[in-house]
Image (tube, rainbow, N blue to C red; front, side, top):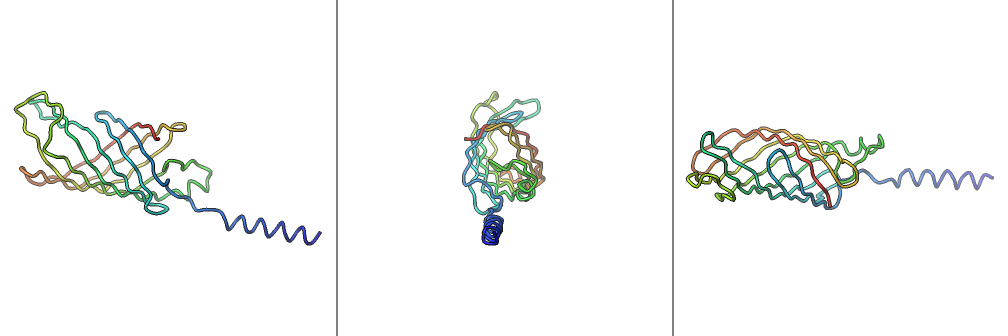
Length: 175
């Protein structure tokens, strides 16, 4: 009886120490849409809590009284998912990087117009760096939503420097 009890305690102790820490996924591909725009992105695991979010998207620029033009946007965004362990301990879903994150978004918008409705508008090349906070949650097995906000710096090559507000709410599908 003592041997059985000892073996049982040993196995319980070993299984407790063998539990893995919560971690971001190795690689996730997503298609997302928001109020305006369409994006394709990938999140690649760099460590247990850090993923590199890389993205190609199409979004509009509005010129009051002159029209709208659609342009590509390229983004690299290291994300620190800070609450995965806490969510896992509470029994909440962390699959497909479901959690809260801090990030720094590096955006590049080339001097390219995809769908102009006013041919006289010139394209504006810009770079921006925006620290931000966000959340990502699953809606079922493969659908998700993401929301985030940040305030940062934008440089337009022909016009100068500005502040940039990054607010997003997107719904997407993960592969």
